[in-house]
Image (tube, rainbow, N blue to C red; front, side, top):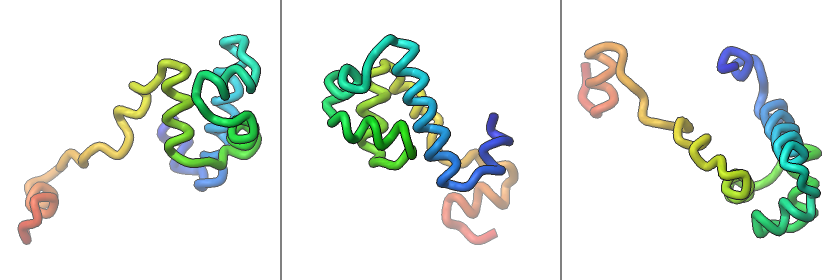
Length: 96
């Protein structure tokens, strides 16, 4: 799946995340109103996220919490693992 993400632009990724929110919500048998209640967001926010993927990171985190899926964020933007000594020096702020 990571290879697919490399081919997508940010708008495509937003739309994909919106579809995933809708799929997860329907899999739980929840309405948009139920997800809104559980996530403390408005129904309009849920609808916008599902339709376009556009929203705030905080909204996505609240939705993930409602789905009990916060662990999905663990791998995002982790520190880079150096692949060479030169890269390790660069990451530590030392010139090669």
